[in-house]
Amino acid sequence: MTDSRRYSPAAARNRQPILEVLQAALPERARVLELASGSGEHAVHCATAMPQWVWQPSDPTPEALASIAAWREQTGQANLLAPMRLDATDKQSWPMGPFEAIVAINLIHISPWAVSEALMARAGERLVSGGVLYLYGPYRRAGEHTAPSNAAFDADLRRRDPRWGVRDLEEVVAEAERHGLRLERTLQMPANNLSVVLVRD
Image (cartoon, rainbow, N blue to C red; front, side):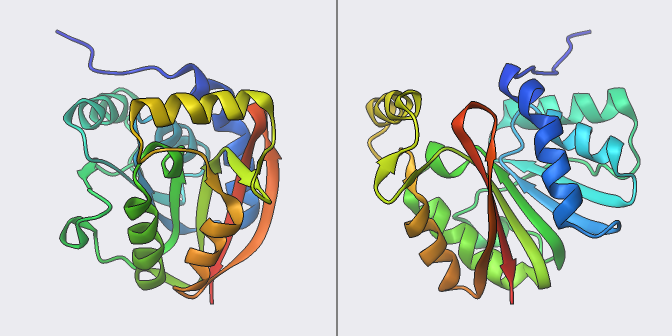
């Protein structure tokens, strides 16, 4: 039998720091929607650590959905729901919620800006009052990269797809504010990434 589980070295490094930020930002009981769950390792790690969180993983790609399903079957976490196909720009593919949190790890820079616009719009609709939109990844600040490695990564992303790239944090926050979300905190994370915690009014 083929094992569909995928493994991400980056997820192995950052899953615990990300969990700790989420534990500080979310209530003990929470309904969480994760976009672009990828391998599923963040979903498994968070659902295992916090059994009172009901974690809904999602992804647009069949390979990722198969990996998430395989991790879920292997761990047997009752609070980790079956993965769903979700294209952020397709409003009909979004679950109605409401959610205490929406989580997007390494999504905004590896997608067209239209994905960020849709993410903010849907978060404004689907989050409860006081709910959290959590973003993780590299950002420019005041128009400047925070590390040479991020500048090189940005150039590589734009070579792969001109619509991709490391975003300006200020532009992301401004888009969030248009949909009733305010920046609560940013935290420095491993490998020159940031945790960005936005809260719905």
